[in-house]
Length: 159
Image (cartoon, rainbow, N blue to C red):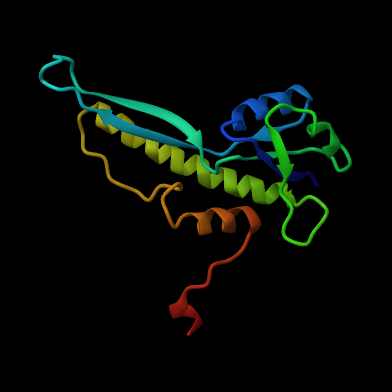
């Protein structure tokens, strides 16, 4: 079973570090979120309104890589590398099972597909339904639960 390391990058270097790790031959995943907004042009400029779409890292300064145990030392010399994620009091790097990465990736891909569809509907001039974005405040708990497999307990169910 393959395990994935959680790697911290330096500021704004997630994608560059991912390319460097891939060049070493290891699979890498940077969770990204689709973002879009309408660019409003004033009447003075005469330019029409348009929409813009882009992707941004979902968890700033974090990426995942399937690096075999013992080869983490190869990361130290890479530009943009900061450290490996280690929970408090643990000296070994935290290893995430591939099944949890796959579940998290599926959740992110589904949310991004919804956001791309919303963008497409706006381009067509139709109203897009709003959804809770993964990057919204309060969504960090859902992201961490997806990564680490923690189950959130509803207060009403627990009572």
